[in-house]
Length: 526
Image: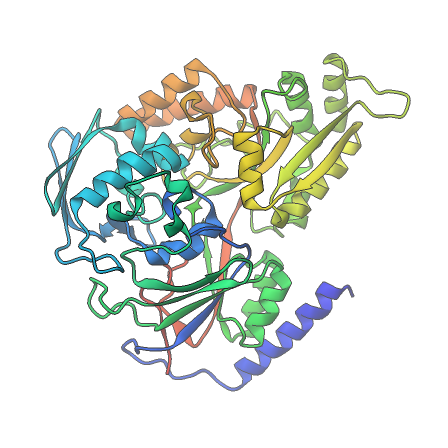
């Protein structure tokens, strides 16, 4: 048994001991007080969720902020900063009434001006999904008074409300961010939000402490006094900490671990396609279309044939997901084009023939070309399996694990890569999470946008038509055409759809792992 197996056995033993003591009697009404220790796998680096789609930032920062709406487990919109809204008959005007008496953590009143500023000066410039989606359809934003925000759209947009939660559109304080570059604002490390928790401390590389906002605008909430965020990069160490009572909440439990934990008791497991920072995620390999080798169609097609995605499903995510069979997630069934990637069956022989046709024949040492692949350290296993697969067809791959800040600079600013790995979350609608990957207007120094630098006028036109079309039947046809084109081109290679399992100790109740404000209603048995 390897070291990981030894650690897991210790973890299971400790969980069994916790469970053997017998379940605590759950109170019928939530109790106030207590601290939840939350494990996250990577340091956020900063705490401004409006300038990035990175899940490690949202996992911490979303608890500090609010959106205009919040989403329930079925991802239906309900009130958050907006207590109500109305939609014009033509579907092109949304009028929101803000909750009265909301204040930022520094005591300043939150007004409609904050909402307008956040969208126009931050989200539409730096948040990849919101820029590509809502930013493309919002014509103007008006603030007739301090509690009213009016969005006027260029055309009806069915996904509008789903794009207004704290993950897609966190509202920032204008009085803090009005001057200078929001990417460099000191408040990114000392945020002033409106959310259920306030920042007490943040130590890069170690974690953060969030404390209850005593003047939160939602009566009685939150119930917990504190969230203690611990950065634990190793998944096995997270599990061991959970079992020993050192950690109360862990997201991203592997399939094997989840199945074993389920049979032992002592913890609650929640399966969801969502994680902080998005939903319906596909682990995706980007090709740098600015590089000669990866700009060659036959090379991209060859690499697609050469990667054994079934092995990735088995050995990396342990069956917690599916091999991607289309560029749009199956979690958006009306837009998903099942089987459209079937032409790229796993075949090193077809891959070799395509490389020969592209002029990349084997040299005397057996190699054809050398490529690098950049990714987060947490994706090391993906990178290693891809390296092994491509070595079989004579492609030498150098693995370059980078932390998130270095990755964003390398990929989206310097464009210094051949291949990269990104978990592209498709969101609730293709216009929210997919469009950003393909439209030419989203190429540039915007984190997790169009990493391939893919340019196709027809694709731009189809996405524009998709956002302007109301009926799902018509939109489905448009997205089917999009997927047919990008499957033929492949600017990306879609590996596996990933599901998420969250585990937390049974002493806690009310966690909502499907939303960024996962602990707003959580409480602890006292």
